[in-house]
Amino acid sequence: MNSHIDLSELNQNISDDDVQAIDGLYDATYKLRPMSLIPGDISITGNKVLRTIIKSGKTSDLLGYHIDQLYEYLKSDKPIQWSENGTVSWNLWTKVDSTKSAVEWRMLSGKFNISETQMKKIKSNEAEVLLGIPADNDYGFELVIPFNDIISVFLNKSPTSINYTSRSTLKQYCLNSEIANYRNLDTCQQNEYHCELSNHTDGYHVDTNTLDQNNLLDTSISDNLIAGENTIDILIGNLITSESLLNSSYGFSKLNVYIIESPKIDISAQFYTYQNEEIVYFDEDYLPKKDQKVYLRIDIENKSENITLNNLDLVMKINSELPIEIDGNNVFFNNQDISSKIRCYINEDFSNQYTLSELKNIASGQKITIMSEDINYTITQKNCKDKYVYIESIAKLNYIRDNLTYIQIRRCEKISGLIKENRIKIPVSNAFGCLNITCSVENPDDISFMVNISGSEDFANLLIKPGQTYTINDLRLSQYDINLIVPQDYQVVDTDTYSSSTQNKVSLSSTNYEKNVQIELKKKSNPYFYKNDQETVSLSFD
Image (cartoon, rainbow, N blue to C red; front, side):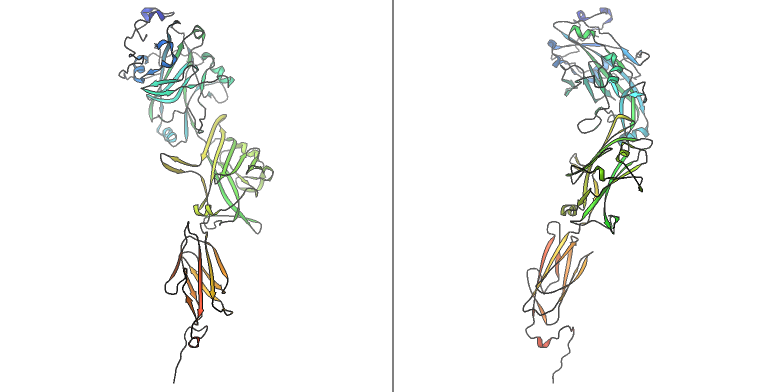
């Protein structure tokens, strides 16, 4: 099909009678006019060609189309004749014109089914869906899409992230009036075997096993899938701007949809200490306190079924600052190499030690434990305020095959205005309150006083002497009652922090967690009527 009735002079190796002219396909700005969608069942089909021109030979005006319109002109129910190796090649039907550049469009369509069980795994991020081709190798497939010069993939009539060009002159396209960027293939020679599989497209191909800057699979088609029948349309454009391009190889490969189950890896950590040279682990009933030095145990468990995890590269950060780097050869803590001081155990068998090389191949169901007294940490006041020590982690590994990469990221993220907490959390004690109690007495004797401090969970009894300060640490952030027990011949002198006429209460909070209590006493003015250390005195007079 020609996009204009006056383009028959561009026909090459084809009769004018075999070319349908379509007048009015373009508007005044040389953009394809929107057309109504013509629905239809899709098998593995496609053999129509649409030729369009580029205004004044400018590649910047190449792509301004609506997908419904392309469906109408390019959908075909004629099956594709694949070669024995699953490829198809074609010739170009356009002459080179010094005043006009052209592109030949083809659309290959197919359909596939996704079961409810598969869909559940895909939606829960337990599996990725990638396009690739069959291959004669140990795995039976390669995650590549051969093409040349332009490719866009649509799933259930919606665009995907697969929009590539092998021509550096192409930068953008306009789909349904929305401007988007093509991704340019800087080189097609990074993988020799992939280029061999793409020899019918001059080696050009999309590598669908590619991670983006956020460590996500860049060409996954998981987002637009539905349970049941799905349609896929591959739009291919071949650019004709020079004689040399007529000698290029053009074609495609039969694609498969690969549902690849994601590995399941659990990274966990816990603090421990030593008591009588024995390891004691902290838990919810025994929490580390402020300023306490603790040691960190790291567990890496492969919870996948029948999947071995290879070449683990783990980076952890305590409180987003203190780095721990672990792989199958080395461990660095706070940028110091401590590999020789590491103890490595398997499946919690602490009677046998192993080397770090166990991290290169972690079998299904296997747990590897990393320990060292050189991985230590001192609990801070901020940790106590937060009630946790937070550890971020990024685990990068290979699975199924060495070039299939999985990355697990555990960190605190802000998504759509909401905070998603995914860091490793180790609980610590939030009891970091402090009371400083001082007692003073006018002309003190050699005497002591009893002070009782009680809260909802903590209490203490102090025997205090005048002129000394007593500090109670590790108090929970709560309200406390302070009661003073004094001999009968002493009385309280009111201060800013302790009064004789009220029930004395002190509240500790995360912003006001240290309080001073000043108690002042004096002897009563007529001690004759009081007897020391005696609660009741009976007096009689004649």
